[in-house]
Length: 447
Image 1 (cartoon, rainbow, N blue to C red):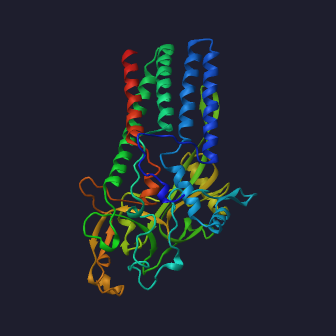
Image 2 (cartoon, rainbow, N blue to C red; image 1 turned 120 degrees about the vertical axis):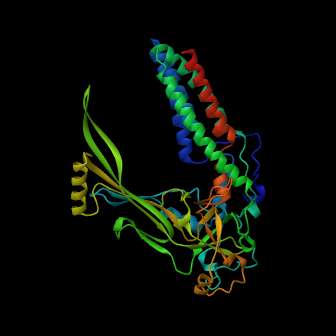
């Protein structure tokens, strides 16, 4: 499947279906929960059991709905699969997944098996990069295959299969909410539903606003970039100063090379015994102990040319899924394990049962979408790189320390196509939760 077969205009309605074994499994689980709710409601002997059964039904519908992708996700997955060579796919399969490093110590390493922020169409590899001309064009100067100039801007369908399932969930949940309020003679469930609906609507509004910003802002070509607040899509390539080798939490066994931006966290799974009216029970939660982040300047190249980017100046950063996660029943050394347990006891955290280190970041060769502001580079900076300033794109640097009216500077791993291809329409993200909120308010008024 190629670009010519991909219709990026979603239209009014688009039928979607699960596109991976994981999503099919979620759909089946949701369907089972849905039928379980019907079974409980039909077999109810009192109003409370009937209301509980009715609440299980929309839960099953919601679980099912998230198994159905956005307008273009399945098509984009197919394009990605056909664009990458079988050798590269085999290499990725060997590197990804869960591996047991030490069974006795409970140590394992997890690398996500899929990466929705990765290239969808094949991008040039390091062997084709011109190390002597970092800012110059590739070959004939054509934009990268996945650049918006070539593929266009996707517009999500107004409604999808997801919409139908969520609408059914809203109808059944509002009916169940009314029965629940009547059975328990309490308005608290309606109040909780209103708060949840308002929060989901606000999050949806924020996401739709970002989506509209991406759709409405034209993507600039780096070779002809002008001062201001441009939108850029390109590939990460090394700046003259080099790249980063990230050592997570100081442990040489947890290392990631070829990075230009990162953040990691160290967490402990602490359990403590709490007393309740029914007796004692164990309560466990993850607690963040340490975090760190950093980055270095890199060259963003879109095929027409490269421009220097300083990722540390962006307040809004999103590196997508985690790169790697290390888990263990113990800390990396006996001393660290003893210290972590002592500190947890000191702060009342209880027993430390597990440890987890999670790394996020941006690596060479990966796609980047950014919307930022340009900064004029000084003569000293140009001279330090041996640049004569004849190329417009060498005179500017992309930073993210300023917003413009209606424009929020941001940088994330992925392209416009991979980002918008997973987005849902304003109807699905705003109107549906707003409809639920209004229904809950009506129930509250009647209650």
